[in-house]
Image (cartoon, rainbow, N blue to C red):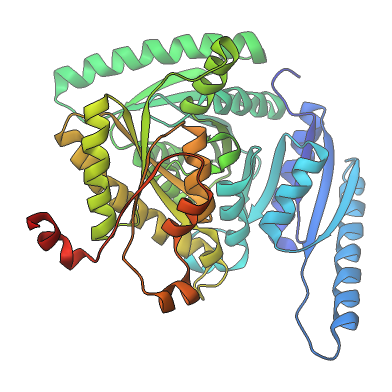
Length: 449
């Protein structure tokens, strides 16, 4: 089937929390003619005396769960092409397995909404939504949560929706349900809103025609006015049966997932039905690959500033804005959600991601406001990874030179225990790195001097 993945990977815990995800995987593999693979990830509990015994018992239990799941699928008429048992952290292990078999879609279950629900399996589904290089379908467990009555694809004011539209429509065709392309325009006065809606409807219609040529099914179009996540969630709430939402998210090549931001975060947290998240190359990545292929070099100009929301990083942002404006470059404003902290924070993974992504939007928003004031083109990037690695990776991907960083001026003792992102960037960078140092309270004195 055009546009449908050849291999589907079901990530399962073997319990009731993945029952509907299993049903979804079987339905889609059958309808789309894809191979169905399964993966179960187990991890040990450290013990100074019985480590080998505990590891062996947990591995055996994981294998038994997989075997029982395969039997249930075969009893329902499904076929499992591959069974995979892995040890490690679930998100990383699932991503690795998907890459090894070349999966075009990962399916995972999640036990409902809200903090209580996410405490069970939401951490895995949230992690995959932000980390997987291939599309992820999250199936919320709950009465009559599957199959969906139709697919709703976000377009227009959503991020990166080219692949999301193709895959969302392909899933709709495999399930035998209708598909709608939804575009949302911002609130405006009546005259402006009507004109914007007409323009959006024309854009959606053209995109629907393109999808029909590839997939063989033409989505309906639905232009709306309002707040993007709220408008989509309201449409979903109007339905009598579940609606599968299809969203896109940006990926900066090998640098890692760039989180779409508030729209996707809110929908992930509030949707009561299944949601498909499809990663797509960031425009800077696609443009760079194309231009390098045509000319062998990149001629665009861009500047990168990494911010953590502190006063000193805001000062670095001020310098970056001035330079970008002076040389006519685009300014990329980067905030990195430290994946290391997510596993050692003592806070639930899903809650911590939401908290840090909000902090990231606030931090990058401050620098964006400076850029807008000076008339400098800018873009905010919120990346999931290790700061010292992601800053350099993103700089390479968007071809930024120089990189601006803020440094708090830590002492030798602080360096020994904490380390310094700016110091690591200076040591490893193959391009210019400008570090704005000093404590925030020293700023005024420095400027006077």
